[in-house]
Length: 225
Length: 228
Image (cartoon, rainbow over all chains, first blue to last red):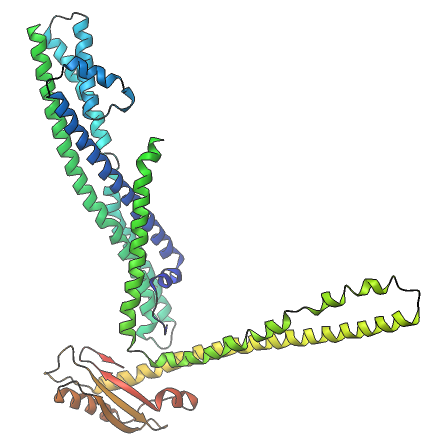
C-alpha cells in the first residue's frame, strides 16, 4: 500500500463476484459500442441511399426503367428501393392482369408497400432494444458489484483491532470501480439509443412520405389508363 | 459474410476505443495518486530494506547452475571398457568416486544454504508487514491525539498548509517543535503549534521502530484535515 495503487491492481484484487460484474460490464460496453458504430454506419448509408434514390426517382426517368435497373441487382435491394420495388411490382402485376378497378389495384399496392415499410422499420431499429437494455441495467449491475464489494470491505474491518481508514479504503475503492464501469457502459448506450431512435423516426417519416407520393403517382396512372 | 462485413469495422473501432480509454485511465490514475501520495512518505522507508535482497538472492542460483554430475558421468563409461589393466583404473575410479561425492556434498550444502536464504527472506517480509501495520496504528494514534487538540482558526482557508518538524524523546515527550513551512497565516500556524504542544506526550513504540520512524518526523497541517 506504500506504492500508488494502479487501477489494474484494484481490479485484480477485487473479489470474484465483483470481478465477474466488471467482466459483464466490459462486455456490455464493448457490445454496445459495436452496436453504436454499426448503427451509425448503417443509418448513414440508408440516408445516402434515400438521397440518391429520390434524386433518380424525380429526375424524370421512366419508372419501368428504374424498376428494370433495380431488378438487375435483386440481392441488395434495401430500404427505399425495396419499397419502390414492392409498390411498383405489385401495380404492374395487377395492371398486366387487366384488373379494371383502380381503387382495388391501389389497395393491393398500398398493402404491399406497408409490408415493405414494416420490414424496413424492423431493419432500421435493429439493436436499439439492446442499447436500451444496456443503458438502463448496467448502472444497476455496477451498483450491485459496488455494494457487494463495500459489504465485504466492512466485514473485513470488523475483524481488525485497529480500524484505520487505510484498511477500508482499498476495498471501497475497488468496489467503486464497478459503479464507474457501469456508468461508463450505460451513458453511451443511452445517448446512442436516444439519438438513433430519433434518426430511425426521421427516416421512417421519409419512407412514409415517399410511399404516399408513389401511391398518388400510381393512382393517377391507374385512373388515366 | 454480410455479418462479417457489417460488424468487423464496428468491432475493431469499439475494441480500439476501450483499449484507449483503459490506457488513458491508467496514466491519469497513476499521476493523480502520485500527487496525493506525497503525504505518506514515511511508510515507504520500511520498504528500502527490501532492496538488499534481490542482490543476495541471485548469487546462490549462479553457483548452483553448473551441475557437476554430467561432467563426471561421461568419463565413467570409458573407465569400464579399459578394465584389463587392473590396478590403474581402480585407483582412477576411486578418485572419481571421491570427487563425485565431494561435489554432491557441496551441492547439498548449497541447496540448504539457498533454502535458508529463502526462509530468512520470508521471515523478514513477514516482520516488515507487521512493522508497517504497527507504524500505521501509531501514526493514526498520533494524528487523532493532535486532531483532538486542534481548533482551526476562523481565518483558515482550504489551500493553506503548514509544516512542522517534530522531535520526540523515546518516552514520547515532545523535545522540539519547529516551523518548517509557514502557511502564510500566523493564526493558523499558532493554532497548529498549540495543538501539538497541548498533546505533550505521544504514544510511541519502543526500540528500533521508534528510532526509525518516530524520533523525528514532520507534520503537515491542512485546514481540511490533518495530514502528515
